[in-house]
Amino acid sequence: MEDSQFDQIYAIMKASFPIIERRTYEGAKELLSDPNYRLITEVEGNKIVAFLAVWEFPMFRFVEHIAVDPDVRGSGLGGKLMTAYMGESSKPILLEVEPPTTDIAERRVNFYTRLGFHLIDFDYIQPPLQIGQPDLPLKMMSYPHTLTEAAFSDCKDTLYTKVYKVNKTY
Image (cartoon, rainbow, N blue to C red; front, side, top):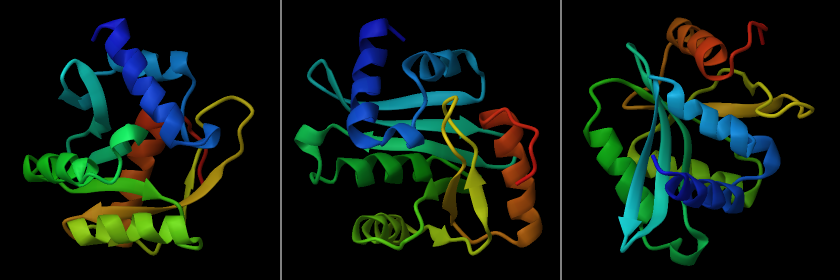
């Protein structure tokens, strides 16, 4: 991936996620060398207008980020990108969401529910993505079905060791 392409992706990420929900520029760029990590982009003209940042493991896939350029949000592009990704997967797909305690968080959960995701009722903490940031209590959603507690625990262990690179038990 060229630097200019990554810069476009990171600009969308900065416009879409608060600092606690994203890595530093250097930390995000470093992920490109991980064989389990992949960026999927939607391009209009020569401009990246949306992306999915995903992790692919033997037993499941994990969507770390999905974001659409603020200039084209609301056009259905995010749903189209996620639906295409879901359609190419024979493995369960997981993603993190904020607990549905605010209007915007509830809208996000409803967006994923309409796509076929299920809100998992087990506790989940996202480890910090940047030094100095706190743990972040989130919820997990899964597609095409919900997970048992044992399956959720196995997936969570993989996320903590492979995605977040922590050995801490949450």
